[in-house]
Length: 588
Image (cartoon, rainbow, N blue to C red; front, top):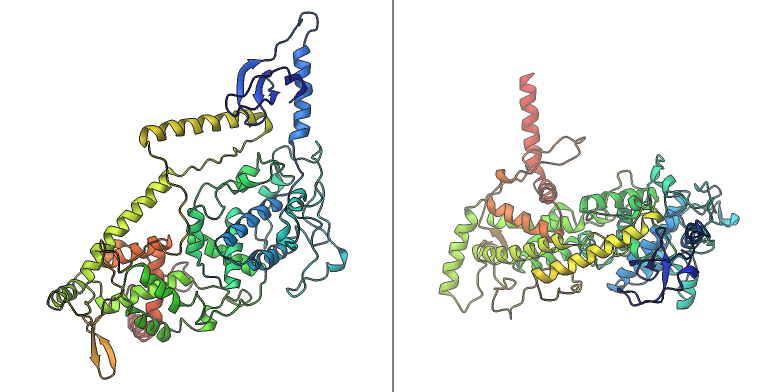
C-alpha cells in the first residue's frame, strides 16, 4: 500500500476510530489497523491529461506493500518452536515448575532438531534461503550427555537460554539471524521459507513435526518430570483452552506471516485424540533415542494406587474400595517400577496409559463386588437399602442403586454441557489465514462479517453474557459431605458386599464374568472388540462414565479392563487356552 497517497483521507475508521489508511488495488481506502475496507475511492484529477495516473500510483503502492508485509524469513520448525513455547508457558501457569520449559522440553526440542537434521548439524535439510548457524566444535557430539551448542538466536529465548534477559530483550530478539524477506528468498506459496518443501517432505525414519506432535513433546516432558498431570488431563486442558493448540498460530509474532501451504501445516480443525497422542508420544521418544525415564515409584502421582484413589473420589465411590484396588495392583504386578517406567530404548518401547489403567482397575473391583450383570447389583442394593432404613445412626452401607441414580443425573448434566460447548466452539481464528496477500483484504472482510453475525445471533438466542473460561481443575466432579442436594458416598461402608473369613475379607459374590473370553492373536492390531449389545446396562454405564472422564473411546477402556483381567486371572486364561488347543488337536 502507498500510505503517502492515502494521507489526504482524514476520516476516522468506523470500526476502530483510527486514522491510518492505505489503498487497495481497486483504489478504495482501507484501515491499516483493523483492515476495514470503505466504499470511498481515491479521487483522480485530470485523468484526460495524464492517462493511467491512478493505475501507476496503485502499482507503486502494491510493490511497496509486498516488500513491507513479507515480514521475517522463518522456517516451519520455528513455528512449531513458538507453539511449544506457548504450551510450556501455559503449563507453567497451571503450576508446573519452570524446569519443564527451561531444561526438559528445551533439551527434547534441541535433540529433535539435531536428529531430524534441521539444526545442530553440518548439512541441514534447508536447501534455500538462510541456514542456521551451528558451531563446528560440537558437531561430533550426538549422545544424550553432551548437549549441542545453541543456535545463534531463537524465537523464545527461555527455551534455549537462561531467563535472565529483560522483557525488552525477549521481544527484540528474533528466530535465527532474521533478515527482511526478499523476492528471491520468500516462498510464493507459503509465508515460511520452506512451507511448500516441508509439506511435501517424506523421509523414512524421521518423525515429521505436526501440531499434535507438540502435545507429545509436552507429555514426554511431564512424564520425565513425573508431574501430577496425566495424558487425559493434558488433553482436557487443551479442550478447555488452557493450553494453546487450536489456532495456536494466531499468537505468532506479527512479522511471521502465514499463508498458503502454512494453512495445512499449522491449521487444526479437530480435537486431539487420546490414542493418537499416546502413539505419537512413544514414536517421538523412540525417535529421540531417549534414555530410561525416572522411575515411577509408589509415592509418584502416576502410580496406580494414587490414581485409583483420585478417580474413586471423583466418581463418588466409597473410600474402602481403595484397599481392594491396591490388592488388585499387587496381584497383577501393575505397581512394579519396571512395569510403570517408560524406557524408549527398550526392545519393545511402550509406556503405560496410567489414567486408563487406574480406571480399568476400579472397573474390575466393581465387577468383583457387584458382578454388574443387571441382577446381583440390584439385589445387593435392596439389602443395603433395608439395612440403612433400620440403622440410620450407624455407618450407612453403600447402595449401588442410589449411587447409580445420583451419578447418572450428574453425568448426563455434565455431558450435555460438554456437548453444547463443543457445538458452540468457534473454529475460525481471530487472525484469518489466507492463501496469498491478494486474498488478505477479502479474508479479513469475511472474518469481520462472521464476527458481526455471531454477535447478532448470540443476542437473539441469549441476551445474557456468555460465561468466561472456567479455571482449570484436576476434578470434573466434586462431592462433599456438606452438599445436602447430593449424597456423598465416600464414607459409606462395604459391609453389605463383603464377609469376614478369619482375619481376611471376602466378597459375598463368588461369581465373575470375563470382559473378553478369548484374545486376538499377537499380530492383530487390537486386543478385543467391544459391542454394547453384548454387555449389561450397568457395565455399559460404568464404561461410559469413566470414558467421559478421560475423554477416550469406550472400546479403549474395555480393552484395558480385559488386559487387567488377563493379568488377574492368568490361570483361568491359560486353562481356556489349553482347552482350545486340545479341541484343535482332536479335529486333526
